[in-house]
Image (cartoon, rainbow, N blue to C red; front, side, top):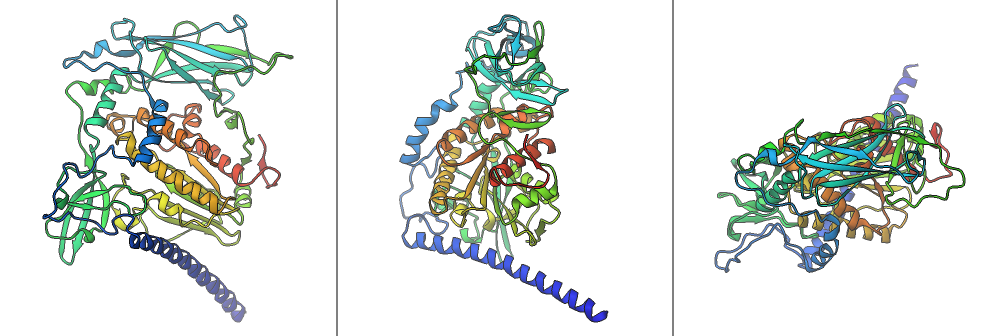
Amino acid sequence: MGGQYCRKHYCLAVVFTSLTLCVLCFLIYNENIMNERSSKLVENKTFFAKPQVQSPEHPLPSDVCSFHSLSPEDALEWNHMKDSVAWPETPPLPTNFSIHDTSDPAHSTFTILPGNRGGSWHVGDQLEVLVKINDFYGHPKKFGGDFLLARLHNPTLFAGVAGQVLDHQNGSYTAVFPLLWEGSAEVQVILVHPSEAITVLERVTQEQPDRVYFKSIFRSGSVTQTTTCNVCLKAAQQNLCNYTDVRTGEPWFCYKPKKLGCDTRITHAEGGFKQPLKPGEGNLFKRGVNMKVSIRASGISNIDILPKVKGDASPSLNIRPAGYYYQGVWRVIQGTPVKQFNTSTAISQCLKGKVLHLYGDSTIRQWFEYLIESVPGLKKFDLKTLKQSGPFLALDYANNILLTFRCHGPPIRFGTMAASQTRYVANELDSVIGGTGTAVVIGIWTHLSTFPFEVYVRRLLNVRRAVERLLIRAPGTLVIIRTANPKALDLLKTLTDSDWYSLQRDKILRAIFKGVQVQLVDAWEMTIAHYLPHNLHPEPPIIKNMINIILTHLCPPGESFNDATKP
């Protein structure tokens, strides 16, 4: 009996030791690939190989760096997509402006317009709602630029769909909704920001793109110094450490410590936030007053949707959302119907024999955490890394499942992390083997919100090129892109992560990846359409629907999984 016990635990020890060695080999192999490729680039002198400090005897350029710099190729592409993020021009604020002259949701209204059938609506029709914005005196606004969100929903049916808002640039707007279910439907229109607040958000990004700053610790022996870092810093070259990425050209600078060399940098962390507002401007960002406040209906706010009229040709909708909720389940308008993976068994069967690499911010880390909690056999391997930044690795040895997460490179507003772990997603993608059974999931948006568009454009173009290289060498790889989503706002969050900043980057992301063989998880619409409140990290029912989309793409139609059902 004792011999059997020993043999059993000896076998378990052997299995665990083998598993540990496999993980270590995987990590070492990954590191070697990155080092080998970086070395080749350095030998070819494509970019700076080490942090560079300008020698004093060389002449100094007038501008060391710029938040708006792009390569000629990237600048050309950015010019072609500028229309996608164009926003109606908003007038500058007078020095002593009055909040009473700005948009007020309490004095604004929306009205449901008659449909093509008069006073009745059917499934397949389109609903239009006219929104009129007034100031605090009740006077109509004469120009556009207000940021509105709209949804049509039925709390009883757990149904909802995001509307499209059209700005007529005269103080009035039209919200348009497709009618997709039978029964009651209630209109909700939210003023996220008045147009005057958009003026401020645009100005602070242009005037203070460095309002969020970062810190790094430099250490050698007993000497330790901390300096400020950012995408760009105002200083002569000899006073800067240049950490521009050797492969992507992504810029990153730190002020050079007085007593240490640039190669002694050991950490990266968020440093702080500079208040960018002028007197009185904070009044434009008040919760419950003029930020994320519902607008009341002038007349009815509900309609009854009747069954689809037999014999009616499919209507030509002016808008086509990504999908909608019904009974709490996300249904896509076009494409593969989303399967429901309702148990850990269904999820693990779908993931069996597969590899998932997750790259991005905390909204992608949230998916890693969800999968760990949902699949008991998926065990997180202790890499001795920080809870916020990772990297993380999880294995299900019995089902041959590998799940990884790595945060994107700077700027990233995490707590103190090793500088060696601040890696760019484009570089990480170049080390992915890929192929059938491998999925790559990417989400980069919120940490780049405070910077001018060019910073985000450069980052995503680098990622897109890496995705295209991956799909050339491993065509069977599944690549999934997560979009931005609206969130709860206060003054600080607005000045760093406003939904307006997120919307603009969401539009850029869609423009850059248009035509590329990737799948989108439309977190923007999935959050707006849901009955739960907006959150940077959406609530579990929304995350479950997002994971179901990933698993549906990963496990193609025709494959059968226990407890996985079609909608």
